Length: 302
Image (cartoon, rainbow, N blue to C red; front, side, top):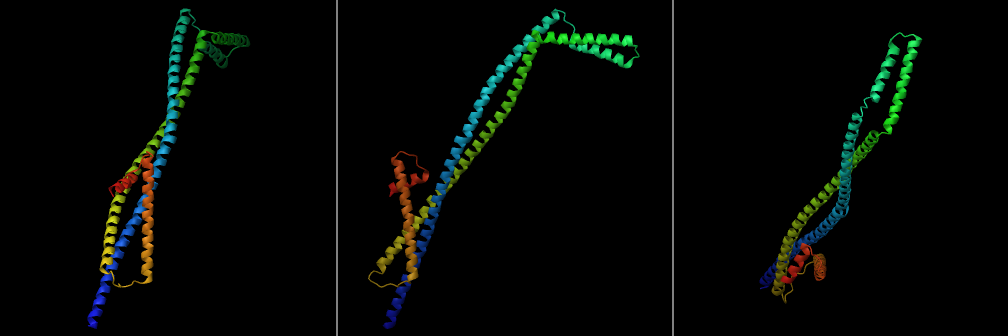
């Protein structure tokens, strides 16, 4: 009789121990998944912060700079059109003045005078001349030099010369405009490219956020499933060993269970705080992210 009672007690204790092992296993799995849930939430928050910062940089930095340089380029293009029209008008006016000069039979030019001077200087250098002949040629050279200076003086005061100077000035300004256009267009394109890179980064972050949210939901479902099984076994243990003195685990085991319970409660508290924040944002009419919306949806389903 004593043997049977001993055997029954041992069986009871072994069954209780097995139940405790199952409970501990479920609790461990649930807590591990809750830890992963916490990590997913942190990852989502970091991801959301990075999205906000990337959008801010793209819009407030690169887009503003691109738009600024685009406005400068637009203004410069309008100025370029004005200068091109002005240049065309001056060229047309020059053609008319040149035609009038031909009509007045003004054949001689500076080049012709310089050519004659070069010929006389070559004669002095290459031919054998006496003093009288050389002085006569030098006098001719001096006269042509005077004619050249006189021609320059008249040319500077002529309408044709003034128009040519205006054409030169317009061409110089046009070249400067083209240089600025190239420089400013490059700056605009550089900021546009950087803006597109930031937007591309945001798209990738949003895809990553979607993946994390999906994994978070799946992970939470598993954690909830383990938690339900855990509660069922706790209830089963309570019913089965009610009024009985079950096998008493050692103090280390009890301490470990308490620590895990506290950790679980902390995670639950974090989730409750997140839900409260989401509800506050919803009441204030602020935009919710996907995780916050799902928290509210799950709460309403409960």
